[in-house]
Image (cartoon, rainbow, N blue to C red; front, side, top):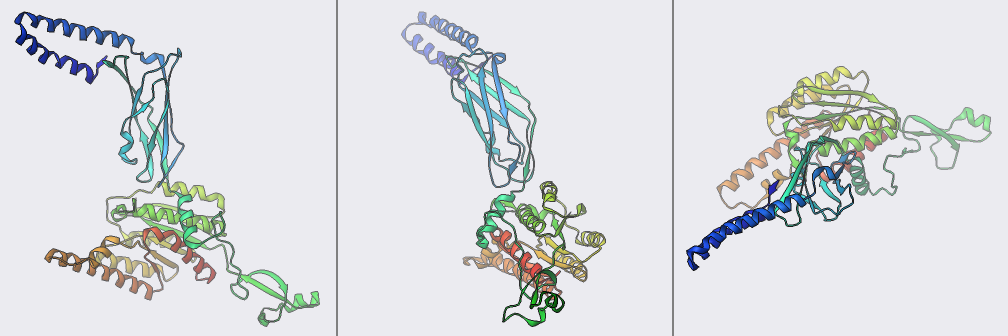
Length: 436
C-alpha cells in the first residue's frame, strides 16, 4: 500500500485543527486523535477497495520498428479479469537515449479500462529499449494507491527513413511518379551500351545506321544506345565524432545515411551494384557490392547499425583499406566532413590517390552556423573575432573543394534539407555521361 498526496494533506491538516481546538478549549485537543484515527480508517478502507494487481490484465504492444523523423505509438491497455470497471491507471515507461525522453512523461488510461498511447520519437538510429513499465492506480477515495513494475525489456529497431527521404527527393526533383527511382535515360547516339534497333528517320545521325541488319531488313535501321549499367558503387560513411553534430533535428550521419539509402535504392533499381564502407579511427564495416533490388533490405540493415564514434577519423587507414578492396573502377561516394586544415590536407592526399583509379564524389553538408556567423552584423570585438574565424574556416573549406576538383573529384556541399536531391541528380548525371 502507498498513501497518496491527498492522505498526507489530510494528516497535515491535523496540525491547524489542533491549534484551533486548543484556542477554543484545551479539552477539545483530544478530538485531533479521533480525526487522525478516522483518516487511518478511511485509508485502510480505500486500500482494501483498491483492485489488486493479479485481478488486472496489462498488455503492452510495441511497434515492429521506428523510422527516423517519425513517431510510432506504444499501445498500453488494462482491464479487469472479473469485468468490474477499473479506476484510472497511470502509466510511465523508461527509455534509453535513442528515444526522446518526453516518452517518459506519465500517461493515463481512462477510468473503466481501455488503452492509451505513448509517442515514441527516435533521436538517432540504433536499438530503442524500454526496460521497465510502471502502472499505478488509486482506490475510490483517492487515499491509497497500488503500483506494479513490469520489465518487458522491449527492443525496437530504429531504422533510417527511406520513404521520407525518397519523398523529399521526389519533391525536390519534381518527379511525377509516386514510385521513386531512376528510369533508364535513353539518349539517341549517346552512351556505349546497345539498346535496340529502329527505323531510320531523316535527321538521325547516319553513323548509327546498322548496315548489315538494314540489308536483311531491306530498309535503313539505326542503333539506339543507352548509358552503361552494372557499375560498381561504394557508399563510404565517415562515422567519426564530427558526424554526431545535429542539423535540423538529425545528426549529420543520419542525414547522410538517408541520402545513401535513396541512392542505393535508385542504383540497385537501375541495375548497378552497391556496397558499403564505414570508418572512423578504424574500419567499422565493409559490405561487398550487391546487385538486385532484393539486396536493399540487407544494405538498410547495415546502414541502421552505423553509429557515431567519439574518435578522430583516420582517413589514411580508411582510404588505404578501401583501395585494397576495389578490384575494378568504382564510383565511390564519400559522406564526410572536416573542420581543420590538418584533417583537410590528409583527406586531400588520400582522396587524390583513390581518384587515380576510381571516380570519387565528395559529399559534405553545408554548415549553417558558419554561414550565419560569418555574415552576422558586427556589434563588438567578440563579433569581429567570431566572424573572422568563421570566414577563415569557410575559406579553407572552399580551398579544399577547389583542390579536390582539380584532381577530378566531384564535390557536393548542399544544405541538409536538399542533400538527397543533390546526390540523386549527380548520380544520374554521372551514369548518363558514363564518367565511371
